[in-house]
Structures are given as C-alpha cells and as structure tokens.
Length: 145
Ligand code: ZN
Image 1: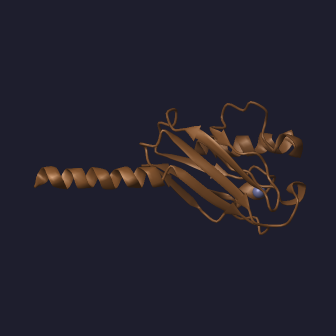
Image 2 (image 1 turned 30 degrees about the horizontal axis):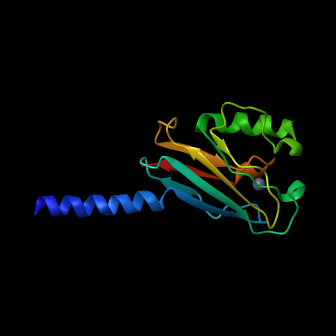
C-alpha cells in the first residue's frame, strides 16, 4: 500500500512541478502587476516567464519589465536603472545583480524569457519593474519551493 501511495504522490508532484515552471504575469496602465507572489518548483530546470502589458500607453510613458534580484539588490538596481534611461530598458548594462529580466514593453505588448534556477540557491527573491517610480508598487516575491 505504501508503495502505491508514494507512486501516486510522485505523479502528483511531477504534474505540479511541470505546471509551476511556466509563469504568466500581467501588467496594466494603472502601474500594477496582477501578481504579488510567484511560486516555482525547485525541480524546474528552467522557468519560462511571459509578461503581458494589457494597457494602451506607450513604453516611454508606462513601460514595464520584470526584473528578478536578491532583496538587498533591488534598490541599487532600480536606482542605477533610472540613470541608464529608457533606451537601456531602465537597467544598467550587464548588471550582474540582475538575475533575470525581460525587455521593457509598452501597452499591448508581450515578452517572454526563459531562465535557469540552478544559480538561484536561496528560497526567496524579489521581482519588480525598473521603470522610474514603478518599483515602489510594482514588486513582489519570487519563491522557490
Ligand atoms: Zn512599469
């Protein structure tokens, strides 16, 4: 009985892990993400994240990206990103503190990135939009379970 139960349990975990490796997150003209927490499974080899901007405003007015970092790097990345300007997607070029980032998009656009969890050994990170001022409200927790 125990054998059958663990096989069923593993099958269930397997499905859950698969489902949690593909992440979709929406963003709006109201300066918001539709999620404040993203949970992925440690067993995901790669995470595919799709950011959608359901608004209408252009990228230089209401641009959004999705940036992943350690919580202590969040403020410095955002501050340096502001200096980098809109052409650089409000991120310093080759910023090694950035663990993953999409491009900056405007209303009606969508962008997808794939990144590996192999270097992400901590259980919790933060995600945010690096557009000036947005990170105050457009941020959340990225958990690896
Ligand atoms: Zn934004």
